[in-house]
Image (tube, rainbow, N blue to C red; front, side, top):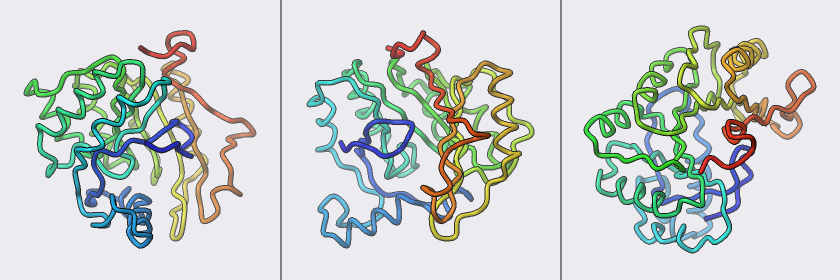
Length: 245
């Protein structure tokens, strides 16, 4: 576990590292670049760079965390990658279920795999697991319906990097929306009107809205103000500011 600079979480936990690209949002994958850097530094966990690798020893980590925290699971991978054994995914879910004092945020671009495993009854959904899908452009809004069909107690969307408008965004059954622009070298531009449209849809549907960043080559300089305001919406709001536990 490491403390995280990602604005919408507190910590990261990586029982799996490495991945492969599946859609446009993967083109400038931050995790791939970071993994290569860690490999070059000689970090043992990344000796294989960005090759998909399960780390069974990491499954014990949450049992050692005493203070409740919000944890982004697999920030350096995708838990629903087709090459991750189902029984390993079930072990990750078991660990999350046995640590109910933490909130675990799981995010995938492989909503088809997620939905299939759920439909077969192979996943159980404790109250402290928030399940999300990435929706980076209009081509991938179908992931939302697949998420909606799962038994996850809290469902969220990460529209990051936001690469197009999402005019057909349907927020029925969705509990949280994160929006952010792409950052780093070669970052693709995110238009303000795309963000404002999503914000208005969230307000209309009473869905918490989180604006993470404008992105760009220098994301710190671009900041995260939207029309002069910081948006830090969270599913925590749904229960009067208390953790959804």
